[in-house]
Amino acid sequence: MKTNGTAIAILLITFLVLILLRVYIAYAVGIASVACLLYLGIPLSNVCQQMVKGLNSFSLMAVPFFIVMGCLMGSGGISEKLIALANSLVGWMRGGLAMVNIVASYFFGGISGSATADTASLGNLLIPMMVDAGYDDDFSTAVTITSSVEGLLVPPSHNMVIYATAAGGVSVGALFMAGYLPGALLAISLMIGAYIISVKRSYPKGDKFSMKVFMRQLGKSLWALLAILIVVVGVVGGVFTATESAAIAVIYSLFVSLYVYRGVNWKGVWKILGECIDILAIVLILCGTSSIFGYCLTYLHVPDLAANAITSLTTNKVLLVLLINLILLLLGCIMDMAPIILIATPILLPLAHSVGIDSVQFGVMMILNCGIGLLTPPVGSCLFIGSAVSKVPIERIVKATLPFYLCMLIVLLMLSFIPAVSLALPHIFGY
Image 1 (cartoon, one colour):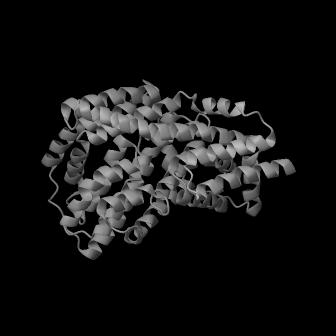
Image 2: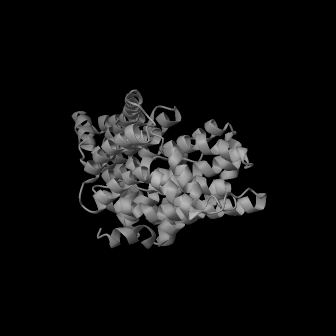
């Protein structure tokens, strides 16, 4: 037990020190794992074996396809169509452009599956539009970055695929269906918060609602929205696996971007594919090294030790659930999303099971926790992208985001303590 304690210390302390030294997290995970294995005297051939094992997953093959699909649709003239559709639906309300921002993020998230892509794409269009219409720049940025988290919950989300792999074979289809209602609740809670602030600050209304205009914009956006149906209906209906539906969606997205919306040409496609390769390389290296890290954690029984340590603090299920969320929120302040999913899932999922939380429910909880982490300093990528787009200092954005943090935490608590919020749709569809 002494040897295991020392090995655990080597693994975790090496990892934390490297993170503090700003070593890229994939390499920090790999180096810490190798140091631990050397101390334990385990052959380093296990490193290669575990990396291959971590990447040898059929469901993980969906990740590159979803990334390519999101990049193609995000660069193919889709953003403007979705903004116009959202404007025809909710632009008539007080603070109409804020509502448009939130609803457009829900639509766009179903295509890109990426909060950072949402912030960069919609932010470049909507933040200047809101400021010109009389909205404060910090409020406009806060609405943009917080609503981008909806895209992590609304399928197809490649982070849900990563979670399914880390959790050991959780149904991707079930996770996809589980994300719709929480994503909608998050959108509604943010809209309520934005409406209250808009009324207090007398932000403007848009044009009156017109069914004719809405139907016209729906027709223009239909090609984009069909990409979501290909993935979700294909997976839920059992027509395709997640990987197959993602591959078909890429071909469809390429056709729509090139020949329907004509927002990109073939030269632009090659540039987009190059960017996707950069993103994918980061994700896959991280998946491989995290597999070694997970092997070390399992070998040293860290999940059991962590569960025993946490349950020794309290046996109250409510406090344990709150503690799990607190751990994930704190991790989100210092780590990016994919590493948290890959590293924390093997540790916290058994604890979640012990308090009666289903694997699918926990997955949605984790995704939302990590999404909130994207908005918190010091490593919140959406926070920094929003600041770069709007030219508003991070300190002002964080202050403007505080009311929206409250909205997001309310939804997180609903996810944590009301299983039906995330499990109702999967149960209806037989998962």
